[in-house]
Length: 293
Image (cartoon, rainbow, N blue to C red):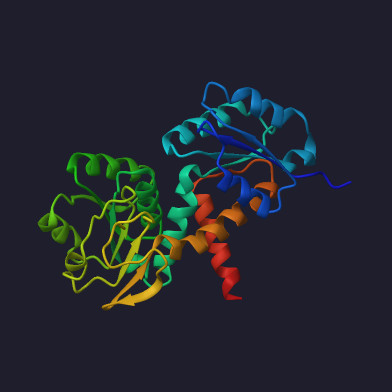
């Protein structure tokens, strides 16, 4: 008898995300259990319920998905989930609060289509945020030189220090982007810029974008007007904009959705996986590889 695949959605928001629920169903989950208002203090009982109802091979047919709009809250829940596991009695778990890991993976993989990241310098705008930090980490793992930009240089410096932990030989630096002069200086010698700033806030105007003649690629992950980089449309996907290849949030979103589907499916291949940024990026590489076959 085939054991039904159950995904338990743990959402830190009061109402569980319908987006994540629809993706789970489209990824082939047989049963979806949705719980909202989750925090690290309330998660243990739900995790125990997943761990103790199926044994042996059956454990891999139950998995956990952590979501919600607050990425830091999701990270705390993930830590609490892992603390609840013991020995081989565990189930696989995926963190993608606010789409942080699937979006960051899709952005970096999109950049890698056009650039040799090992030979590239990339400015990450909104680099102190959860998506920006994941983008910076993934870029660094691929060998890129990364500038983490923020209007507050102190925050950028702290974020760069945090991201560099465990990344031996990473070329990470902090830059200020407060004002056009500082932004133009930060863009100097950059091959690419990835904007992951707050929704509805323009960070780069068109003149600043094209001031650096070295720039080859610009990716804007903001889908809410006004977009983060002037001149990019949300639907752009590899469009040439005055010599710069551009992607908008929806242009990256197609790959993000494929990665999200693949990651949910991957949860049910074993019972001991923890899918965070690095693991989800690796799944994205597999998605890209299959699309080339």
